[in-house]
Amino acid sequence: MAAGSSFLERAPVPALAPLVSSVWIQQVGEAPLAQRYVPHGGAEVRCVLGAAPRLLGPLTAATHREIPAGGTVVGLRLRPGVLGGLAGLPAEHLVDEDLATGELWGDEARLTDRLGAAPSPQVALDRLQAFLAATATETDPLVDDVVRRLMPWRSGALPAGWGISDRQLRRRCRAAAGVGPKELQRLLRFRGFTARVQAAVDRGEPGDLAGWAVEAGFHDQAHLSRECRRLTGETPGVFLAQYRAACAGADDHDHAAAYLPMLRRWRDGRSVQERRARPA
Image 1 (tube, one colour):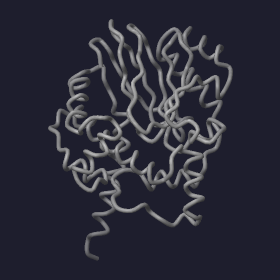
Image 2 (cartoon, one colour):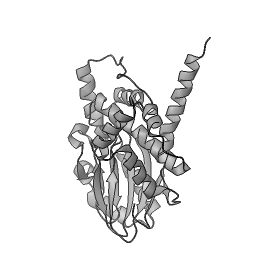
Image 3 (cartoon, one colour):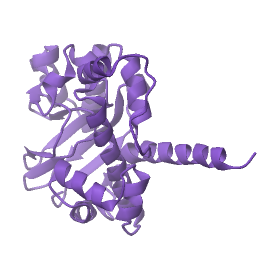
Image 4 (tube, rainbow, N blue to C red):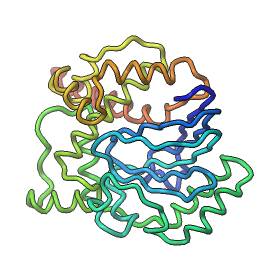
């Protein structure tokens, strides 16, 4: 993150909670910023105010997008598995794509003008959320369950018991989330690791890459290292150091709305496991 930049994440409006995990306002300082976007299993709708809103489809590797000096961005992070229903076409066609939202939902000029003319970034974000809420459609309940059961902090093989063939499961996951269940599990597991990184930096805690790897469902630290290189191009240690350099001690960088729900799921799952392990 460039000097003078800020990035504040918040929970979405209640109407969008089933579809959106977090929303954000980002303001860039006096120099252009090459913003890195890391795979997390979902998609993102973002708008540099004054330009057309864009959809960044589910990523399979990190990518960078330049934000101009002095630019303000408002954005929404879609939950994994909801994109297909919102886009009105199979999400697998949107993997690693970056396209204007008008190509999916129309009314691009009007939405661009409404966001750009907003009296404040918060009003622009509110308008973007209202637009998406009006676009919302029902999600695939089976894929919703798949995502819930593939969330981080689970190790081992893919869970079973959805009552359909593996081929049907892959087809429905690709249509809703963009990728099949195995790849989705890899992306969500890495999202668990990034949540751990964000929390540690915010709290001023030292790094524990080996511990975080096991907690998020990786076999070991070597497994985490391979996946981190595949998804970000960096080792876990470098990834942590970069995040720490950008966000440590910065009051205008707040990612708690993104990582706290992930860590709550881990704590809840651990509590269940501990209860099951207790003798009767």
